[in-house]
Image 1 (tube, rainbow, N blue to C red):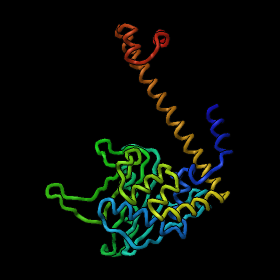
Image 2 (cartoon, rainbow, N blue to C red):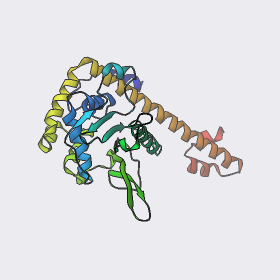
Image 3 (cartoon, rainbow, N blue to C red):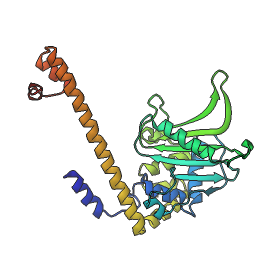
Image 4 (cartoon, rainbow, N blue to C red):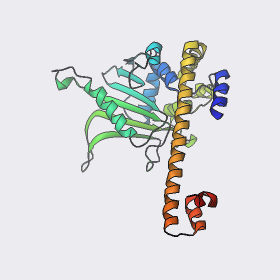
Length: 285
């Protein structure tokens, strides 16, 4: 019933610039990799780099321009955005809404895939150049790190010496961000992903005047909005399915513990206390 109500509500919902989900996969690919949007993705990349005092770039060329037909057919590239800078550095951007510790391996795999693809067979290794991976996460990946933005390089442990600048992985954990994390350009972009009002963002960074125009173009396109809605529905039902499976797994664990305690002769009230099951549920085991 809830699923039906959700579909009916979202199907008739009027999408505006301010209620548009800025983390939607279709929208992000359009905003950051549609031809003509190079200045937008460049501003975001530079915001990430400035935040940790790395060099910034003057321009980028998008290597995987957004193509709606390919996107709908599932033939778009595995990373959301891939571009190359004026000094031949590759930047890949991934927006991930759900995940766990295995995402680290996934991001390493995507980095390695991009790095290895820089060379054709028998080409010299001197042609290899840095690959920067930027991962925007709507979940917490590193529980032991308070900073919402962390960066990893290959380093020698004892002497703290960086081996090479060819491998750089940024992780931006949106749930960790709050207004006290205000960091100029990057802060504006994080607020954007989290749904900040566009008029406020424009006051902070004038690139959002351009972003606002592209958002409106996206909303005005029926094919794009239909693809957007489909992605929203898929994400909703996937999350709902995962929640059901998680709850079922917890319930199975509670029942297993209750059976063991009951078999060992534990008091039924004690079993209920430690498992969360009702007396009636325990009696039926």
